[in-house]
Image (cartoon, rainbow, N blue to C red; front, side, top):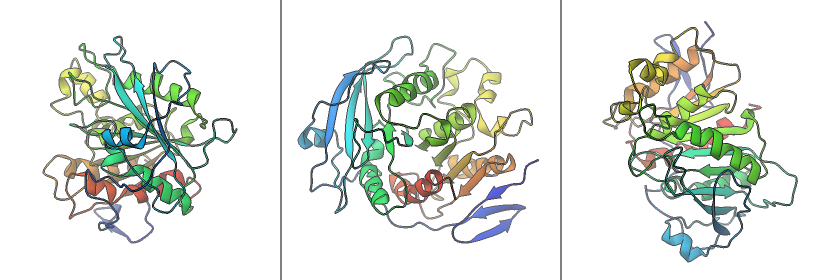
Length: 338
């Protein structure tokens, strides 16, 4: 069995045979749903099928972005751009028309040969694709972290992962007639992003980040698609699909195959070297994430994954908890030389 590896920039202690990072809330977030205003940010909107190579260039005014709840400023630093991409539904995958939000960093130039890592942002339920840019004010955070040299310039993509019929998809491919969200993300969204933007099109430069349902998505996608992703941040994670998503799968065997808390204990389930995994959870949450998040941190560490686990005892299951930990997660996952 591989040695468990937990790392900390602060204090590490041993408990019950494992190393656990304990960190209090950092208090750097914004209230859930808060939107930073006061300046304009370049933005655009276009309608595409994700298999297309359509240019994303039509201008969208700051007032129009405000109506989407995504108005952000650079707060004195160079600002990137936020694009709202209107994605056509795909009946074959069970997806509907939706918006995908794309952040490109300051100085991004479609004519340049410079390439960038990509963060895939996965929202919770109930929720929508704009949540990461509203609840966590992510564009402003990325601007600041890039300007301070904490992280490299990155592209961030927030797709819609719910449908009108199925809110809690857990990013699964349903085998009972529901949507195929795993396929949508891995075979439509990721290839489209690589074809449309200047990205490093490899696993080492793709990061998953999710909250609540999105945390489960990030975890499951990381381990189910190790050839496509190399790291994930899970904010309030779950070890299994849960009762709301269970009807999407035909039987208990399929359910176990999509349950990280189960397959990570299977010695025949392969986990490659080099994976990174950041987890946090609010101690005041009344949901299963309080127990499941540390369990997944332990199981992943047992399989040789580099894990940072930062429980936040005073936090709840909300975007404030996420906001308090985004900076640390991004720094850990995007600086692979550390």
